[in-house]
Amino acid sequence: MFLRGSTRSRIALPFIILNLIVLLGLALFISNFVQNNYTENLKNQLSADARLIKEAVLPQLASAKPQSNLDPLANYYYQLLGNKITLIAADGAVLGQSGDDDLKSENLHYYPEIQQALANGTGDTIYTDPATGEDTLQLAIKAETDEAVVGFVRLTVPLDEVQSNQRKIRNTILTVTFFTIILTTLLAWLIANRTTRPVRALTTTVNRMADGDLNARLTPSTRDEVAQLTSAFNNMAKQLQEKINALTTEQKRVSVILEHMADGIMIVENDGQVRMINPAAARLLGTTADKATKHTFAEVVRQHQMIELWQKSQQDVDQNREYVEMIETGRKEGRILQVIITPMTTTPSSSLVILQDLTRVRRLETIRRDFISNISHDLRTPLASLNLLVETLQNGALNDPPAADRFLKHMEQEVAVMTQLVSELLELSRIESGQVPLKIKPVRVNQDLILPPVARLTGQAERNGLILYTDLPENLPLVSADPERIQQVITNLLHNAIKFTPPNGSIRIFAYTQSDEVVIAFEDTGVGIPPEDA
Image 1: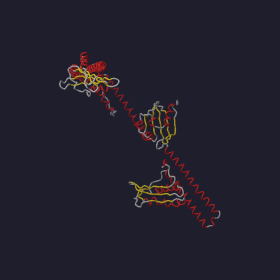
Image 2: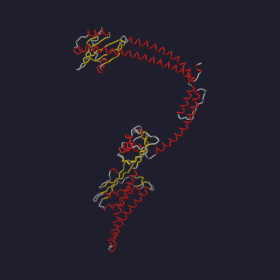
Image 3: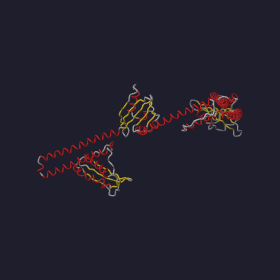
Image 4: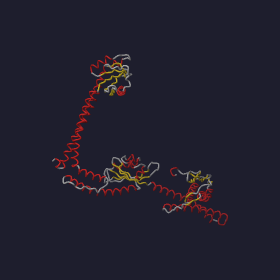
């Protein structure tokens, strides 16, 4: 009759049975607790008795000698308390004992309870007699004066009665619990099998959805509250499926964008905790997403200017203001970052931090500026020289054939220099526009790469008072390279070496093999290249 009621009625009986089982378990726990508490109380009582005895016999222990006999004193307290008492010297020798035990021939210094008392002040152990199998609780306490340890007081009490009572209690509880479990298990299974069948079906469906099967649905099998729950669950599952699909699609889009963004993105809580960081930001800050997430903004960026900018954004009452600052990091790579901090209106307790790496842009601007400055300076010299030569020829040097020929050769050299500079400008323009295809082929290092630029610039080096020479082995292997581009690189390096090496200096070009590569190196007596530009 009880099983034919509502869902609430069918759940009530198993709950009562479960409650009974819990009570039985609690009773077992209390039984064990009482037994353990009894043993602990026994130890506390022995400890208190030992302390009283220690205070009373401390003078005798302090003045005792190896041959002292404190048996009368031990028997006195044995008759008073009913527990066996052993008075022990600091070195472990037995000075006095109660009863008929003969322990004076033994040294108790290394007994466990004595070692514990020596270390902690109090020690106890349960000793099992190998002959009788009886257990005794032995508790020792350290007796000491201000100067040193003078001995120990040990009390011994048998545990046979305590253990017998514990066994009776435990056996009784286990017997009752065993039969109760059998009966209640059978009854609970019969009731729960019918009651929880819809719940199990619901659980199975929920697990399928948790595993990714969002199409899982329930079929109502009853007309009670469970059927209403099933219908509500199916409606919820349908709505949840639609929302999860939309959120998943949107999350994938955002994740792809964040993963492939060149700019670094961080979301920082108002308390300074980093909630999200994309790979670009992790790379710019020299960390990883795992190391940055759940750590403070200061721990992640380790840059005082960024920290100050973030603190400034937090202190501003205008929460819609955007903070932008150009920051040069102090790390080895020396990055130049534009940091933008914007409060997130959708999440008032968070801020959006954008890191834009402008290092390459700034370096290209610097290189372009320096290059144009150098080219302008280099063009000024040959133009001025050409102007002087033209004026000289116009003023009568044309009538002197040897002088005119010499001036024309000089003009030809200056024109060659300007042609080289213009070629470099054109080459720079082609490189920046990406219109410089490489023509890779096997070439000879000496004849195809190094010697042609050296031959072209030897005259310029001699005019500057420099010695340009090569140190090239004959057995260098063929390499795969674009000879025109490599010659251009070598020409640029030689041109810089000639330009920045003082007169009477030297420039050496040498090559050698390293593993499966050929290294071409330059050495001169000039100012060299700063380490930060190398």
